[in-house]
Length: 112
Length: 112
Image (cartoon, rainbow over all chains, first blue to last red; front, side, top):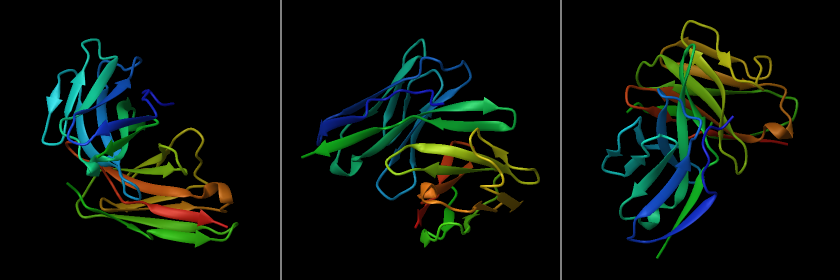
C-alpha cells in the first residue's frame, strides 16, 4: 500500500518555482523520502531524497516538516522540460533490504 | 550512476504465450527490482531479486506468473507467463546503489 498522498495534478508558470506537496503521515523514523520524476515513455529519474533535514541539489530542494509527516519538493525555476509526473516515495526497510513504495504521483504541467 | 539496458523495449504478444524481459547493468549490484506500471498508473513492485537467492515477491504477485532469474550481479530476467490482455503494461527493472535507485527505460508490453 502506498504510504504517500499527492495532488493528482498541478500547473506552474515557466520561470516560477514549482512547489509539489506530499503527505506521508505514517512514515517511520528510519524511512527516507525520495522524489523521482517520469517523463513520458522513460524510466523514473532520481531527483532528491532526505530523512529529516532539508536537502538541496542542482535540481531541486526538499523541505521536510519537523514531524516528518509531510514534505515539499521545490523546483526553483521551472522550465517546459520539467513537465512530468513527480512521484513522492517512501523507502521502507524489509527483511532482505529496502524497497521503494511509490505514491500515485503528481502531473506537473509547466506552461509558458 | 549505473546504466541499465532493458530488452526488448516493446513487444506485442498473443494471449497465452510468455515473454522474457532482460535487464543488463553495466556494474555489479546486489539488489535488483522488477516493477509493473499499468496504463496511466504508478509503479508497483513485483519482486526483489538478490543474486544467489530466490526472488522475494510482493503481495499479489506469484512466481508461477512472474518467474525471475538472477544468475549474476549484472543481469536478471523477468518472464511474464501465460499472458492475458490484463498483463499489458510497462515492466521496468531497477537497481539499488549507494545514493539511490536507477531505473531502466522499461519494456512496453501489449497483449492481444
